[in-house]
Image (tube, rainbow over all chains, first blue to last red; front, side, top):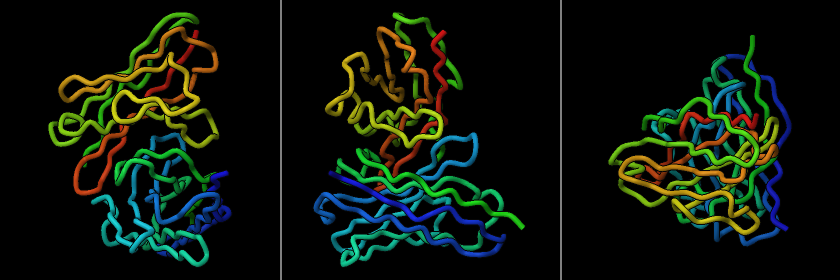
Length: 120
Length: 110
């Protein structure tokens, strides 16, 4: 069965960098884009970006341009989202999700989420 | 890439129908037939309920339906059940491989 398993919760200092991993199994990785979405405490969902596992092409939301990098390691069936220059407003649960309709944010399986707390 | 506009909250009684609106622009909701709807229970990951405006994934009840008119998409839930109480988010493709979410709507089943 399709599974996306994310790395564990992290606490970061302001100004630091974060790297969340998402390990996929149960399907052909090259056939589905991976999206990254975050949700601040008590807030809504926010689309961050995506990666095409076949070739590694990425697209990011304008808000995160220059601060986020999404990569893949197909040999490890894993995807990574790195966010730099962290600030308190980056405290959120970060999700990876498998896309099913080309590059649109239509996702049928999600990781369990990774809670990131940014605090001094 | 401004967030789509949803009502903050809607409510209904068991058995009733409710509709949640999602208003975007001619550059996202109005331009593409790629609006999806997600249901999120507290502490859980979102679940896809509707995609491409009106399609239901396997396993999603036919009590959930989607539609679109102009720049506004809508999610209708008929025959409300207590388990439908959750947050609902719309999401639209916005071009250039980007997508945008709505602010979310809290559904209360009274």
